[in-house]
Image 1 (cartoon, rainbow, N blue to C red):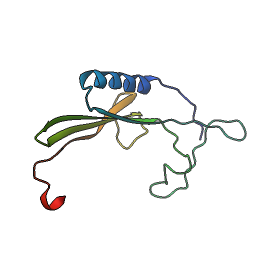
Image 2 (cartoon, rainbow, N blue to C red):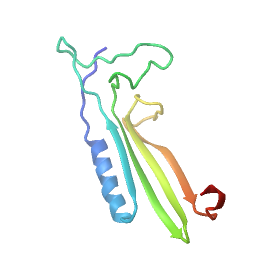
Image 3 (tube, rainbow, N blue to C red):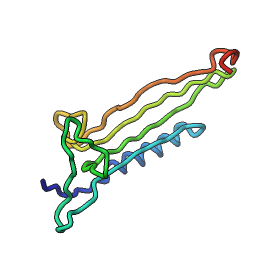
Image 4 (spheres, rainbow, N blue to C red):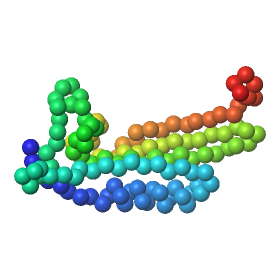
Length: 132
């Protein structure tokens, strides 16, 4: 299996733009999290990267450095409220993956973005009482 290395600056550009936009929109208490991995490697004979897969139903991906794909996630948490101890936080996570390389699939684009997480968290509605 031969695979050529193709570098793409698009995930980095999207992450940087998201970070700058988030910092400008919500400077107080906003949280930014991210994750990125890419394929890097060669064979002992000087050939292209060869991906190790022991086989089986899930092929044990994500072990021993056998991630032969590009993947990126950008997560943003925006806090609001905090009146009388009541608080809220909105979380959103987007993922990027090249076409035909993920657990989700697009029907046309060469790459795609997926909304992996989108949820609201709140607390402080009750006195501490028995849960303190």
